[in-house]
Length: 255
Image (cartoon, rainbow, N blue to C red; front, side):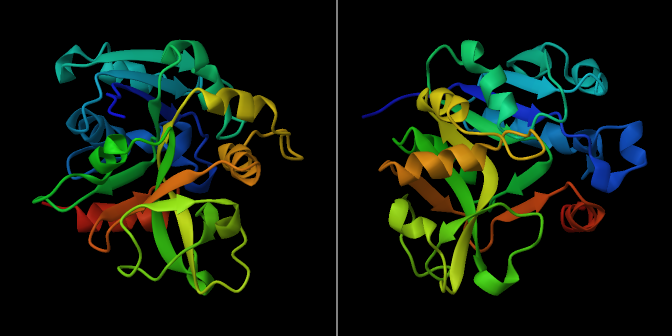
């Protein structure tokens, strides 16, 4: 079944505590890389994938984001903004966007992650948007004993380059005990309206934060499937919520 996805929710409310104190005066998403803010790279990524409408979910401490991007007309897009408590957890921006999504599938992108595919082929996000699943995610495959601390683990994987281009991720793959390779979420999702009820049914963690991955895991465990699209080995991805990865992004993307 063909469909067109034109809406994206950008989660950009995190406090950036790993990069303090500079993030007290500039959001981590607005730190520069290759001559423009990290978040502007994402805007171009979304536009290339056919997205026309974007909702930025931000904290009250990030007025720089709407001040910089405005209405979106400079990008040929339409931008909206919603302010939310920055301690609510990574699932909260999704719930905040329920009415705005108008019951249609949408892209969820985390604003501190920068992804760049090879110049001579379809971008990773474009591949994701082209899938027909209402629950799909870009992933990065890691050796099970080498997953960086800041990554969100999904489950068992084939070795890089040996598995299918898209993986139907069912309950069996959630159990990754003994698996030599694992999928970690790569900050880009396509989600359908199911996700709002899934999040409401998911208990928050002890600190009160609501996590999308917890809701998705429960949804898969209930008998549903997620389509995982692993990034190719030469696709670049930088989770810029820490100085080490941010410096890698600046170095690797330098013109």
